[in-house]
Length: 91
Image 1 (tube, rainbow, N blue to C red):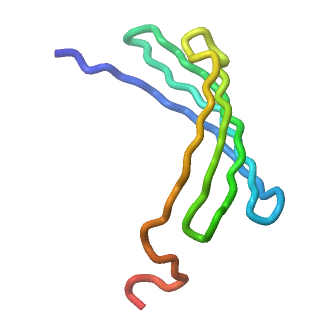
Image 2 (cartoon, one colour; image 1 turned 60 degrees about the vertical axis):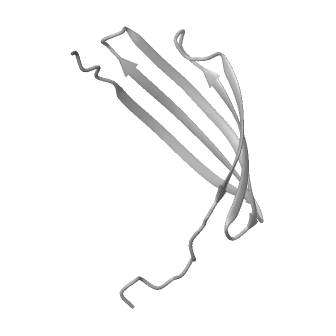
Image 3 (cartoon, rainbow, N blue to C red; image 1 turned 90 degrees about the vertical axis):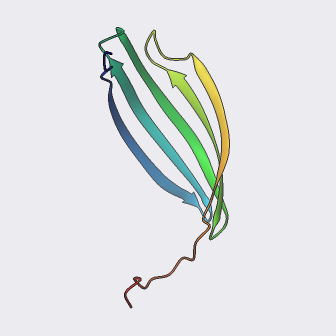
């Protein structure tokens, strides 16, 4: 059995735009020499905080290399199921 080795690299950033609206971006690459596949892509998107525990986001992904998908539209949400507190568990 042969193990496949894959390397991933990413550079990401975000900025608040207005109240609960933010923007984010990323350039990432996934490199696999064993199957000669190098996928480089960029992601640009917006996130909207509905409440302190729920964020909706939408993003556009564009492939920058031949092995990456040409484009994708992503829609999702992040929900915090725990309690947000400024105190640590030991306090």
